[in-house]
Length: 75
Image (cartoon, rainbow, N blue to C red):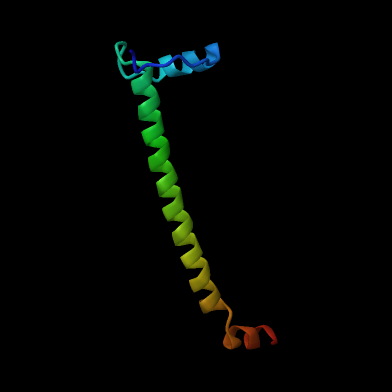
């Protein structure tokens, strides 16, 4: 029994997969796995960026939301 499956994709998707091959003998499975690894890496990187952004927001509030700055705005 084979461990391969058949999936239906649009012809345009098949062309995109073919265009993303590193070499002519690379299988579509290898291309898909390569793309998924890249996607997962990008997703993890974006989560890290979001985390840093939230920390920066908190620090900026701490620096800018204070009585000294607010009293300056009154003049």
